[in-house]
Amino acid sequence: MTEAPIPLRSHPVQLRILIASDTTGVQTKGLGARLRRRGAIVATAPLAAIGFDTERPAGISIPAFGGALPDAVLVRSVAAGSFEAITRRLGILHALERLSVPVWNSAQAIERCVDKSMTTFLLRNAGVPTSPTFTVENLEMAQAIAERELPQTPLVLKPLFGAQGRGIRLIRTLADLPAEEEVNGVYYLQHYIPRPGPPFSDFRVFVCAGKAVAMMSRRGEGWITNVFQGGAPERIEGLDETELARLAIAATAAVGADFTGVDIVAAEDGTLFVLEVNSMPAWSGLQSVATVDISDAVAEALLAFLAGRVGQDEASRPYRLAAPANS
Image 1 (cartoon, rainbow, N blue to C red):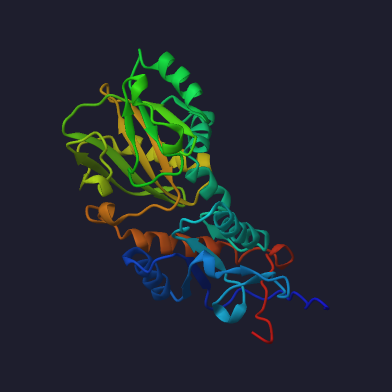
Image 2: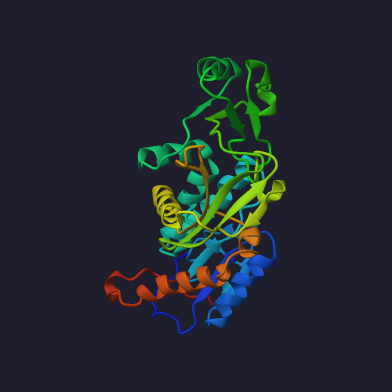
């Protein structure tokens, strides 16, 4: 088969934005509405519905825009699945980037944030304060770490790929370490950071395009304060918002993400530590106390980024594939 030519085309009058999402919840719908309000053409599809197809000029089959490539992809979620399925879905994002389609967040940023051990490695490497962390692959090694560290502090055990506060345990003794089959053979252990409580609190900062867009504290009777675990979102008052913003922006840069939800905790002496960086953050709790429309802020930042690409010299502009004639 003779490969179809790959024409360059000028920047479209209406930008085509694909929202990669497995749900059509409030936040996904909100992003679509804000993008359309600014003149973009928007489609939503799960990554599972996008396939590799070497018979197409782009090598990818997208069920939107008549088969043409979008001008950008905004990733809201990557559904759970087998190792093979997740690898293929992230491969689609890698391929789109290879075709010079901007992807927020990039596959690499998502991979870095989903793997908590890589997140903490990158934070520490960038000089962002984070809790001492250890990740090993068998119970014997985890017990050796716990035996060494527990005299100083309790440890927090988290699922390596967990989210929304699920599966977190406090390890005070060697007997608290679960069997390998309960953690898929991987032990991700952090120093517990003592803080005043109950009630306990921590912070969530939403960062987009290098700016802190919104922030909140989360308060709960238990030490796990995630909103999905019952933590109550509260507007921040009387705290050093500048330092929270600075840390969150630095953490986002460390993982190479375009937008994030950064979790920060204050120790008893007030020292701030970044605990997690979320590349596909939810913001319903944050929006309930925020003074800005977070969906609107993301839409505006993405379109401003794309508008900045218009000024590139035509010779250096990315390729865009026209829709195949038979699509």
